[in-house]
Image (cartoon, rainbow, N blue to C red; front, side, top):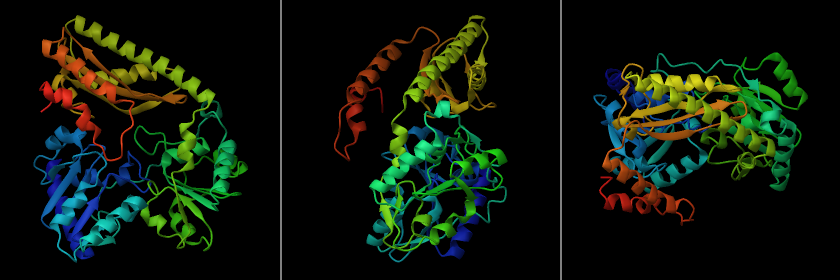
Length: 463
């Protein structure tokens, strides 16, 4: 894989030169600011070879760098080796430290480019302010990888399906009614939703466009008496599309959203969440029309109904049963002096989960890390290079399941033999270090990691 990266970066630099940009930013993002992106928008992985779920690549005429946080340092060092991409270690998660680097490297008058479709309005506002202060220019140059990414995956053709109201807790009609009440309170004529989880929740629909995430690529434009769902063509079964129409939800082509937004008349007020709405769409609205606030749908999601709470309890019970069966299987295997790979055990966990009622799939790729691999955060065992689990040492298992009635994410650390003295000492020290800081409130900007690591640093557990 690493041998493919240098030619790709060279091709991108050629395109950058034609577009007259001196630095190009490639995020881990799609037009919906999803944490996990469809393969079509996995440009950061394609240009760097880094598999981690968080990180940003910046390319200039003489440098290509990946900025990621401490969860991925070990993984990035391994995957970037020989690629020509330099690892830049973020001091804190979700901080745009690469902008400081760009400002230190470029000269006044030079231009920084990015694709406004894949950055939120809040991000672009912050970038523009910072770059302007340094005498630099920000340019929406679109997706510069479009013409050089020859084998780029297509958008998912997987159909959208209905999520039963008995599991959703409320009908889409009731949810839309609640949303419109919020529009009325905020004196908004429209709300444009772009976060995929919010749209799936609001309409009681699910999809398979993102690996391990039951969402579908879409936008939703809602007024007091109208609701338009923008999705790629041929994604809805005819019967479901008819049912949505009966509920007041009308289907439009995903690729027409920009022109629809541009057609909104001046004087209308549009509510958006600047942290999830991409800048490309946000700047299409008439001047002075935007109302920026946290999405009311996010707040609606946070308040679980009684049926949802009951389903969560049942899901945890059956998911726990599946994990117990998997651990018993492993224990019995090791007692017979047999071994299995990390990947094999991850597949076995999936097998036991799939035997549970209402199973849909995994909520993320299982993290099964034996011994040293347990220190690699978000480690994904590979079928070809997976470590062998033996009847000694420590095994970390972090996995979860998607069910029609709920989602799980469970982490367990298993001692496969009598733990070494240092392990017995380190685990409680880390627990004591973290537990007192779970509940207090802190002032904005305080680095809680500095407080939570003092004990382990004293004991020499962490470097």
